[in-house]
Image 1: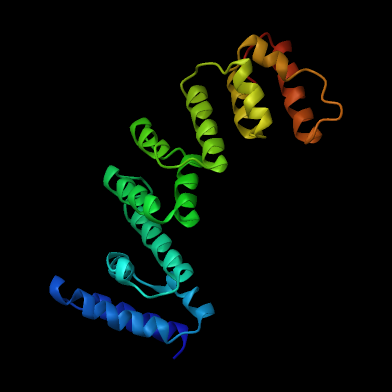
Image 2: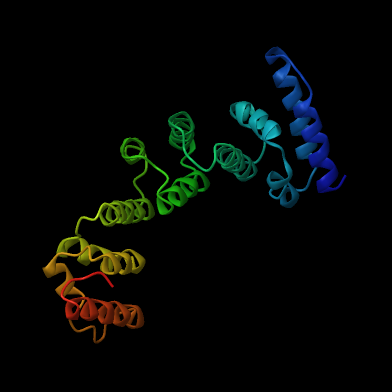
Length: 224
């Protein structure tokens, strides 16, 4: 049985009306179809499954005998589809569900959904406070700091010299460009960007920031 045919059979099983009491037996049928595929195919099928099939797999995950990597792909896809169905916004309920699942398995795939949400500024401050209790990786901390700085710029406040140093260290140049364009840098922070960059990594990017900073100074602090 090929991948498309297997996915269709699984979607059909999951779409059939069933009582909670027989959910486990329905899942057994779903898992039997999955296990009939080679591992390489199992790792590809998540993109072909409907949200009902993915929800069933997610609900039965604790008793699943699927390979961990396959289950991780399927659970990632479930949360991704749920997010899409909610207009690309995290409800408190969905975020709490994701955080609970991440705490259970420490899935890098689930963290990637949150990282993407951070990059796209989808979270409220209250939600971020919850996420910070769970995520501790360097990647998360980097994107969380970028998110904080973007909010400061959006609100028309100013980044400090300390903020600029940290943004440069993390190579978050797009945040600095936005701050320069909006005139959202303290004077000493602006001066940090006009200093010599000889021998510094990413010299091309840093040169561009230096030029923008000097133009900003020449305009007397007006936005670019």
